[in-house]
Image: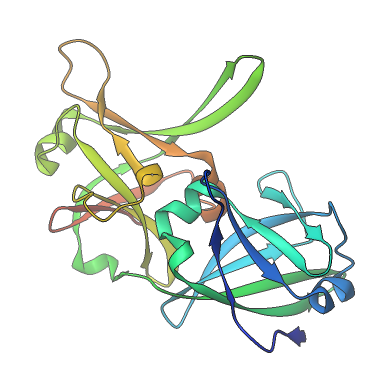
Length: 237
């Protein structure tokens, strides 16, 4: 059930000197949901009419990436940095809608970002794959990300090599938000550019780093298909 809507759109801001993205939320949308300064909300993504929708939910579970709300003269929410970079979201605006779902609330941010759209049946099949979760402790700080592995057969089909750069970009496939890997990085945000690496000296198989932000917000399944359209690689169902 829709509780309230914003009467205007708000520009997504990339914070100066960092990769953090923030956007204003009217306080009168925070208040019915009980969102205060410091309240943790989960972040998911949806697609509606071909555009990206950000969903901030009070219904939390262990699989959700969470951010902390700010509330002063107006509210403010953070967009996970790697996800914001993949969509270059500082070029777009958001209009808000608060929905009640039982005892919980969802704050939907309808963006003006029109996503590249694909039908799975129209794409070339590369392989079925999953993501490997990696945790590291760097200077006593736990960092986590995911790796996507390409065996030699997949590498040959893609024509990729160790040391090549690809940009992670948001897209839509079969009505859900996903990502594509684009070897044309000329218009990409620098944070979204990742370098393909071999798995060892003399090895021809490759891995690529996929940020935790993106995997958690998109809520990827354990297994998915790798698909191609021209020179792009798309994560399908």
